[in-house]
Each structure stands twice: as C-alpha cells, then as structure tokens.
Length: 364
Image (tube, rainbow, N blue to C red; front, side, top):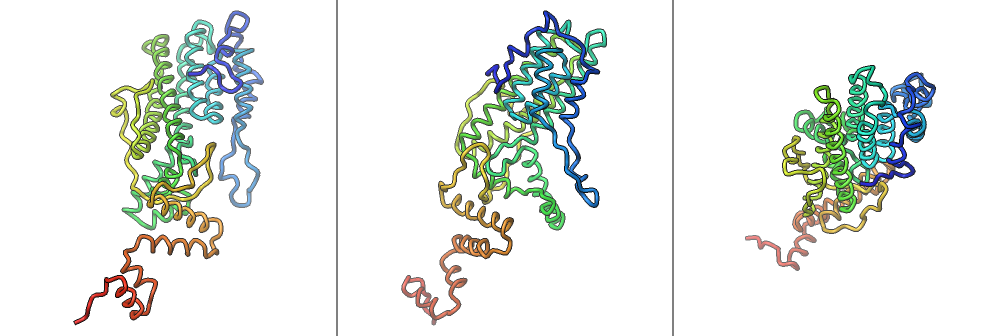
C-alpha cells in the first residue's frame, strides 16, 4: 500500500506539531470553513416555485482544509474524519484506504495528546470514529464499480429491488423505472461494457480497503479496550462490494487469487451477493478507462445493439433508428421459418424460398 495519495503524504500528516498534537480547534474558523465546504443543498429545493441553484459540497476544499489543519494545527479526529470523507468522494476506494491508514496512525502516534483530549473522555473520540465508519459505509455504497454508466453497489441493490417489483406488481416496477431507478437488465448492460482489467483494479482496491479497515480495528481495540468503537459496518459493505466484483470476474472465467485482507472465511462473512439474470447491454460513456466496443461473441454483439436502442430512445425518442435496430435484433434471434413468415407476407414467395432451401413440406 502506498503512503502517498496525489499530493498527500501519510508521513507528513502524522508528523508532530511542535513536538505535540497541536491545539484544540473545535470552535475555530477552520471547523466552520470545513462545515460550509461540506454543505450541500437537498435536491428537492429545485422543485416547484422555489427553484434555485443548489450548493454542491466542495470536496477538494474539504481535503485541502482538513489536511492542512492536521499537518499544521491539530491532530484532531474530527479533522481526520472529514478528510476521510473528502478523500472517499474524490479518490473513491484509494481515498478510503488512505484515510483508514491515517486514522490508525493518529491513534498509534498521538493517543495521549490527540483531540478530543482524554480529559473529555474516550467516548468523544469513539464518537468521531463511529461517524467516520458510518460516513464511509454510506459513500462506499455509491462509488462506481462498473464502467459505462458507472453503477455502484447501491445501484446493484436497487436493480434487485426493481426485479422483485416486476414479479409482484408491474405498475410499481414501471413507476420505479420512471423515477430513474434501474432494473437488472440496465445493470448488466453496464457490466458487459466493463473491462476485466477495470474489475481487477476495483477488486484490488477493495481488498486494500478491507486490510486497512481490519488493521485500524486492531489499533482501536488496543487503545480503547472495552469502549472500542466498531468498523464492522464499513467492513461489511466493503465485503459486499468485493463479493459483487468477484462474481462478475468469475462469470468471465477469471479466478481470484487471495489478497491481503481476504481470508477463507470472507465468503461467509457477509450475505452472498445474488446473481443477476443474464441480459443484454447498452452503449454508454466510459468512466476513467476505455470501454470495449468490439463484441467478443454473438450474444454480446446483440447486447451492444440493444444499448444503441436504449441510447436513441432516451436521446432521440422520435428517431426511427431504435425501432429499426430493435427489429434487426428480433430477426437475429428468430429461427429461419419464423423470420420468413415475419418478413415476407406472400406465401407463394415463402414457399419458393423453402423449396430452394429444401425445407418445403409437400402437401397431400
């Protein structure tokens, strides 16, 4: 695992401030600035007559302010937690791994002088770490795993829920799709457009996160003893995400070698990820890596064509292109006899073709 993330260095962040942990910044302007940088308006504020420009969280500023505060002013667990949140949003799994390693370093290097101080009670420190666990757990569920549409574990779970709706109430399923939710087919389309190398990379990043999470928990247990906060929530969601990626790789015939943070018990540590039905895929824009556009087999070729259909239906609903391509897909999956009946309405012409092909059945 690297101790460097972009322009951040773990060794720099863990250096003492004037031979100590600095000063208490709880009521400083620095905390106020970070809170404002983190603030984001709710989506519903754009609705109705109250439409307005929504404020988005500025995660780059959060990272800059929190990292500078830790380096120059205070070894404070709240700053560590905010930095971890910002890194998770900016760098995804690499940021999570780095932030967990930083939290471990703070506990090991500055336990006696860390803020909140021991005079305030270890419960205050535990509260900050619990907040970090809960926040990172939520972020992990939203991080992109596939290329194409960049679907996450949350979107995968959503697709399963929509599929369950389809079996129980078709109108409820249609309503869910109209609300922007996805079904199993849409998720699988994004999977087909995802490079195996990309999945390998995600699997490795998740494994590093799990190893860092387990190492942090070991350090927490050592210093907090009976009052130790738990990172089981983060461990579980990371395990679920990695199980999903592992299944996607195994579907391609790729066997996964054991990695740091993975044991033989991992497969039973969390509820197994349910399989998606094999469906077709859509064309979509890549995320941070080139996507595959040349099909590997016949099924994938038709899946890519289905993606073209979906794209044009969404972007040019009045275009004839999606309906023509849909017809081509339908024909491509038809037996010859069905195709002849669908394309040629003159039965004498159809009989002539069957005669040439030797499939004409003689009438009595």
